Length: 252
Image (cartoon, rainbow, N blue to C red; front, side, top):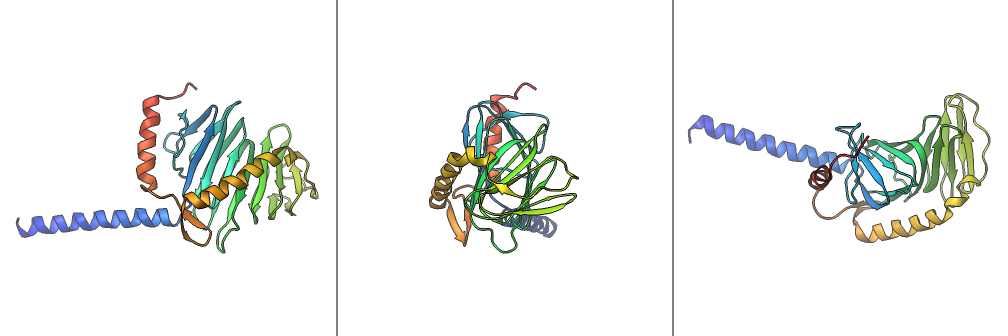
């Protein structure tokens, strides 16, 4: 092998090593979000082709831009680093906007989600966006709902605090409080006792058990940060995306 060829090999190896390091760093600095449970009919729209749906599969790692839609009989559960879990109720649409550890945002375009998280670490921010308001999560047990007719509803269960914001200002919710937002510009109402989300108390009790089970299953890296053991997210996603494509696209 001549000198030029050896230099080309070394350069290629260096670029490959750099690519692996950049990919690993990206995974390290973002939430490991995966679908962990499915029931009934649930569709998945990948970020790479947002208008093309597939039948969702359990275990799929998520990335920014992915959307999950539960149909009338569908439910889905998504884990975040083994440190948080979100349940989507039937007839819900959920989009991952950002998965950075410093700023995580998800968009609820329709339906309801119920969530249980460990206490967020310093520097971690979690937002749930709806078309009418944003819920900035400061605590651990919360619910968010949205419909075109009744607007957005945000509530806190037994623990935590949530800041609700729209163009008019903000309000803070404490445990056992909720509020409804019917306009993105209208003045926010004062919090009231939990009412709308009382029907989801059983789901919240189930989420507490699910999160405890995730703590045992996922490998703990450091305080409140867990990782799914086994192959990295990109390898798992590639494999499961291949399976979904073989099953075929869903009718639009």
